[in-house]
Image 1: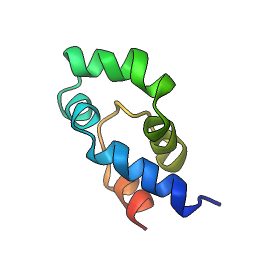
Image 2: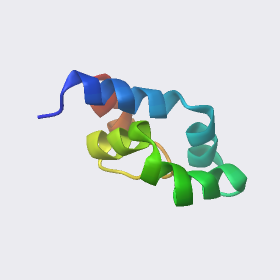
Image 3: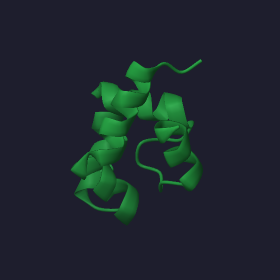
Image 4: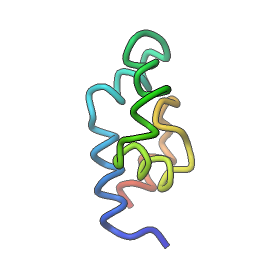
Length: 70
């Protein structure tokens, strides 16, 4: 079961400007940063991956948004 604290951290990753840009563009410095560095050290990125089942730099799906918000 996913608790509310984990969902709150995942929502932070969903709203993060760096992660949002990486998910949208799928290339560039933000993408490389999230892919290689941030997802291993950022608790919000880790929570996002645990809640949604997808990596923090993958394009966002409606299912992932529903899991975070629901």
